Amino acid sequence: MTTGRVQVQNGELAYEVRGEGDPVILLHGGMLDSRMWDAEMSALARHHTAIRYDARGHGDSSTPAARFKHYEDLRELLTALGLHRASLVGLSGGGRIAVDFALTYPDLVQDLVLVATGLSAMATKDPFVLEQTEKLEEAGARGDLPAAIEYILRMWVDGPRRAPADVDQRVRRLCQEMYTQTIVRHGLSGFTRMDELRAIEQIGELTPRTLTLVGELDSTDIVAIADQIESEARDARKLVVPGVAHMINLEKPAEFSRILLDFLSGS
Image (cartoon, rainbow, N blue to C red; front, side, top):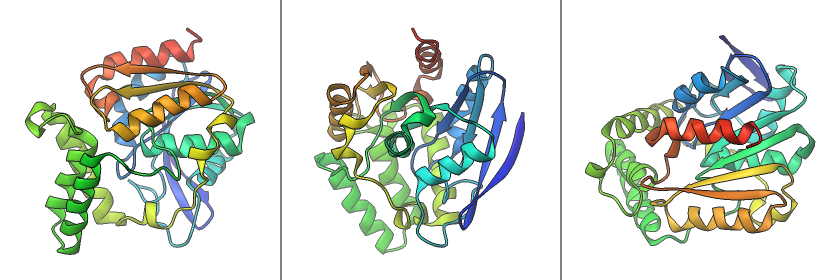
């Protein structure tokens, strides 16, 4: 295992590398950090060079001091690690970064695995997510961090069709810890200072072999994006994972690793 820090424009990224073989880069969800990939790092390192990093404004990476692009940070990471091409696995906001990167640098992407992914310039329409977002903003305005974190958990861990008690509490506690640490350390700078593409309008230009995974209990917005990618991208297929919402790999790590390794092997 190797850990280190990569200098990017006006900042730096903390990363970890394990194993040998074709490189696979894991991109965590928004306001989370690279700890969400513990199981996958172990599974991938048996067959691949597995790489995870904290996006700028998350985890142990630097807090943004100016406008920046997550997908350009990823480009600088590949360059620093001497990688000419890699497969990308991104959950939620990490998928959003991966798609922007694949649209900008298609020749640098081998395979693409998008897990409960968002897309840059997407609009939120799901009534449950809109309701929780309103409550989140109210909690933020009054400085109630625990309440704000709970509304994030309701949206992106529980999902619109489950109560908190229905969810594995270990998953909930891990996400609560990561959300809290990100906000305390970085605020929302990983979002408020980033620039993105408009990938929602460019999916027909997505060329890598792509697998999109979506939980059957996730928001209607995320399900719609999975459908759009399957129908518009040049080489994409969708897999619905039963019994989970947004955090597919955390709720079903063994099944997720199996699906991931099968896809990366060409199955």
